[in-house]
Amino acid sequence: MTIFSLTEAELRQRRSLKWQTYDADVLPLWVAEMDSAMLPAVRASLDAALDHGDTGYPFGDDYADAYRASAAARWGLDLAAQQVRRGGDVMNAVLCVLEATTNPGDGIVITTPVYPPFWQVTNGYRRHTVPVALTAEGRLDLDALAAAFAEPDVTAFLLCSPHNPTGTVHTAQELTAVAELCVAHGVQLVVDEIHAWLIDPGTTFVPTLAVPAAQRAVVVTSAGKSWNLAAFKAGLYIAGSEADGAVRRLPPLALQSTGHLGAIAHTAALRHGQDWVDQASAEIAAHKRLLTDLLHALLPGARYRAEPGTYLAWVDCTRLGLEDPYAHFLTAGRVAFSPGRNFSPEHRQWVRINLAASPTMITRAVERMAASLRLAA
Ligand SMILES: Cc1ncc(COP(=O)(O)O)c(C=O)c1O
Image (tube, rainbow, N blue to C red; front, side, top):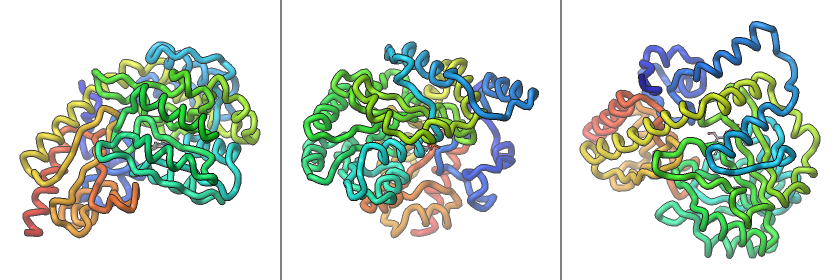
């Protein structure tokens, strides 16, 4: 039994953003929700809580401990109990860390194209965004980052690891170089590792805090993406061994906004869902190969380079000659992707395709893309 095997009719019962935003004849392969059934152990943990009317406030360190156990087993990362603390959702945690470690007027570096809320969280709170483009291969541009960090107003770097939307998995060398640059320039490193468990077989994810030079970093994460638990708000702050000061500056509320059911669901996923996420990752790797083959056969003008992280495909449609690929595929193809312009103003010709869908859905989506091009011709 595969994880991504729910039928379209089953999925259309969902009331979530992915399935409700567009008309019923549009195939939605956009926002980062997974078309997977719930991991049975998560369901059982929530059922037990609901059976007892256990809908109050969270207590204790179960969630943090479950993360520490997963990090140790999966990545050999040993974290002390006091390094891991509970928070609200991941973007809230990012905001709280940035507010605690930077001042109004400061510049915060992000590497673009990037998950759209990275722009909002650096730009909307009396700080400003300092975008630094990834290289054409989707890697961190160390020279450009060094130049940005040297700017006097820049005080923080918000890194996405693995990177959304490209799927880039940063290497230990890259993370070391970035961490050393941050230390040299007095820049606070903040890393969002929410996609860390979803990695193609054969590639190893390197957690930031496994890098000796990165011990001043603060990592934020949750089980929300890898086990499709966005409905259950919960997140974690993980302080490097030299970053306790940054976490101590967080406002107390930042550490108190975890939902009880969120902590229960994420804990169950981390404790009982390691095989599940490995199977999901293997299926997603196959979906990347499927997309590569389909694009090659049906839309040879589209450019896609599969990367090992997460379930998102970043596709360059420049050579298709469309004014607005996102709008074209939506209106003429009845298939919804995420528009590239939301990830950076320079990427209007790109779309992000969500591959946490069934092979049937992915195949139909590419067939619709191809059919829409024939209409446009
Ligand atoms: C990189 C990244 N961070 C954070 C989030 C959202 O996490 P949360 O719902 O916990 O704020 C997402 C969702 O797609 C994401 O891709």
